[in-house]
Length: 252
Image (cartoon, rainbow, N blue to C red; front, side, top):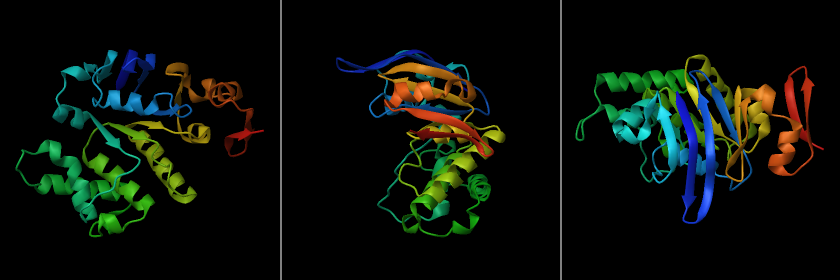
C-alpha cells in the first residue's frame, strides 16, 4: 500500500528524517513508535504530500506520490488528525460527507451515492444513531469515531492517524484501537503513531521505531518490540511479559 525508500527531510540545517525506509501491505497495522521530537509527525506530513522538500521516494500503490494530484491522493489515503475542532456546527452526517468531496466537482453537491457512502460508513463504525447530532456537541471519543467514519466514506484503503488517542479516556481509546484493528481485517491498512508501546503490542502486526530521525527497528511486532528496544527509545528499563491476555509492557 505504501512504501518509503531512503526518506530524508530537514528543516533548514536540522535534519529530522535520515534514510527512513519501510513498507506496508494490505491489511497491515503499522505502529510508529518513538519519543517526542524524533520525526513521527514529519514522516506523516511527508507521506501525505504536505511537506515536499524531502529526498528519497514515497510510493502509494506503486505510484510516486509526487506524480499524484491531491484528488488522486484523497482517493488512496485518508488522514485522521488528533484534534479536529470546527467553528461550524455541522451535523455528523454532513461531517462524514466531507470525506466524499474528492469525488465531486468544485461546486457540486453530494448526490445519493455520496450520502449512501456516508451512511454506510456511520453504520460500520457503529454510530449511525449520531447522524443528526451536531459534531461540536459530541464527546472527544465520539468525534474521533466520526472522523474515522469520514475516512471510510472517502473509500481510501490507507488510514493514517497521528497519535489519535492521546486525549481520550481509557474506554474510548480501546474502542477506537479495536475498531481500527477490525478494519485491517476488512482489508484496510492502518498506520498509527503512538507513545504507548502497549498499543503496538495489543493491536499492530508491524512496528516502525524511530530514534533521532533514523529507523531504530522495523519489522513484525513480535520480533522487534523488545525490552531492549524500549530501553533504547525511551531511556527506561522495561520488560515485556507474556500473560493469558497477551504481551504486556511495563516499566520497572
